[in-house]
Length: 78
Image (cartoon, rainbow, N blue to C red; front, side, top):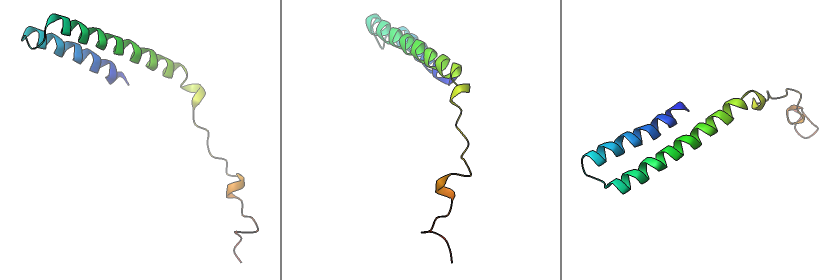
C-alpha cells in the first residue's frame, strides 16, 4: 500500500519536469500538484485506517461442523 504514496509523489515530480520543460503552464502545474497532494493525503488516511483495523477484521476460519458440510437425507450415499 505504500506504493500508492510513492505514485502521488511521482506525479508531483513529473509535474515539475513538465513545468520546467514548458509542457504545462504554472496554473496547470499547480492544479496537478494540488490534486496529487490531495490524493496522497486521502491514501495516507486510508492506509492508517486499514492498519488500525487490521487485527479486528481478520477472516474467520471455516467451521468444520457447518450445516453445509454435514450429510443429510438427500445427499447420503447408499
